[in-house]
Length: 141
Image (cartoon, rainbow, N blue to C red; front, side):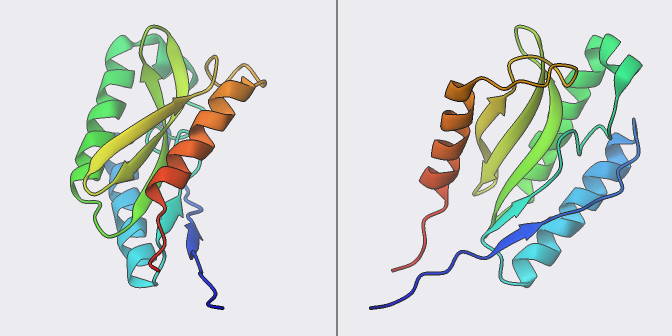
């Protein structure tokens, strides 16, 4: 009987609130480090792209749009590993979201019910998040 192993890297970053370019650079660097260390999955903190807590920056609609653009840019550099990256997202409302990135594209976005001020997360969103990870974390036979 063979044992399958999934190596997961947990990235603990000191992100600066509002420094999207700097935070994206740190995220990209940690993705490379995790991949080079043999990880198949790297997980970043919530709001890693924006820095935490973004507070008044969230009042500017352009801020969340810019965060998504940086997530898309990070995705183009992410190959050979799956990354889960936290960022604020303006969809039909403002969300504390996590992008699941695999093979240089965003394969899913999981949203908390409300932005970071709300503590509860809907159970159906938690299940969807877990399913996205399971679908994209295939281990070699």
